[in-house]
Image (cartoon, rainbow, N blue to C red; front, side, top):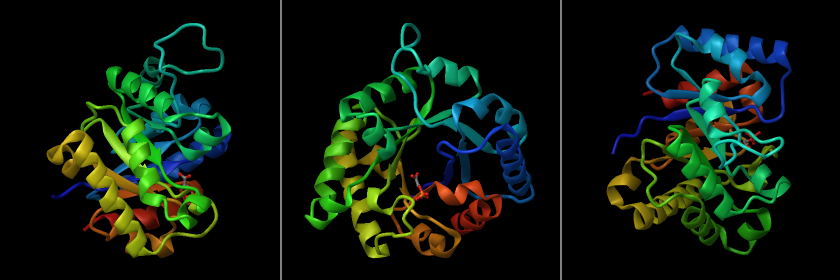
Length: 252
Ligand code: PGA
């Protein structure tokens, strides 16, 4: 089953206007300069969405947010609704990143609610899952991922509106990654869990990204694994050259 790879940048809480715009412009110029066989997504902080949307015009780079609220509008101080993200030019949002699960106590139930609201508004979602170091040491990686798939992914998710990102929490921002064999084993298990929940046809088409210390030096190995359909890149997405050097490995 050929799945087009997705190279996604998660800028997290980084970049003021000037820095963010010049990063987006540099990425846009590099993406425009070549014919790519993969999809691109960048997820800057909320404050940069509308200005970055302008830089991405005429490129194949999609714009995404890093979180969304489940309500359409109303009394939710500090939150951003799916319609607001659409209005700002987003076609994607990340949901359930481990930093939100930890910093904001987000549960699988809440993440699922957010995903449903995003899909209803016509946004695509990247739903993040992954185990802690302690869970990995206890041999619970696959069990945790299955539980997060079952709890966070809506029952009617499609391969079009949903992407899964497997991000072992201990690998995020640490420079550590699982072995290629471990990544493939977990991705295959995630696809099996998706198949059970959504059916084989959907699971076979749904993209599963790997995230956690992806860099130019390890991208080739990770992106060539059969069940790895792209990467969610944090630190290395803040340097246009590194982001592009990773993406080069996603094209055939
Ligand atoms: P990292 O972050 O690439 O800096 O490890 C990935 C992520 O948290 O999405």
